Length: 186
Image 1 (cartoon, helix red, strand yellow):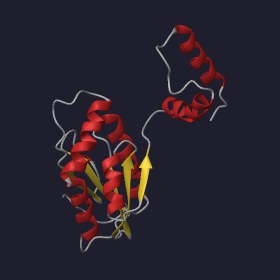
Image 2 (image 1 turned 45 degrees about the horizontal axis):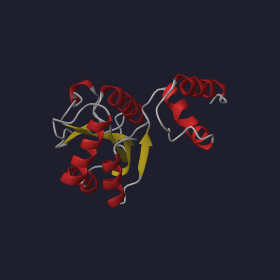
Image 3 (image 1 turned 135 degrees about the vertical axis):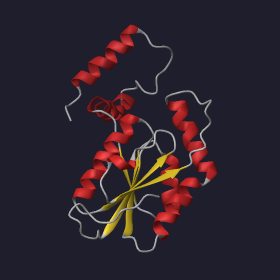
Image 4 (image 1 turned 120 degrees about the horizontal axis):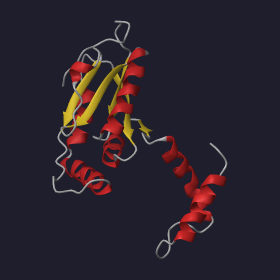
């Protein structure tokens, strides 16, 4: 693990925050932006990451620590959801996430680890943190449009549109689009 101490103002940080993004650019960038904001407020930051799509520590300020966690995800996994499910299954089975978090918690001479910020789809990471008693915050890195869609799930479920029944047809798609347009703005 590459470690450098101190908050943005050079003083010793009172606490550390660990962050574990999903290893895709649209997930890593927002997590590193959050890490930068936390660091600017005087916290040390530990970024856990998979070997796949690892961030470059040289591009980040002192006070950031980077720790590669072997993901053991099968290369044959298809993209999208299948890859995320395979990654979670591999992480849970290997125990590497739990080991990395335990190492951060036990680190001597470092500020206390206050919490773990994870990507919403890294369920294996959340389970490992819960097993160690580490408080967890979830960062949803999706777009505003994605957030609005998630906010609409409850309404769509209660109106009977979800779960989807049968095959899609154009009337159903139009109805869903219309309902989404008429939902209260967030």
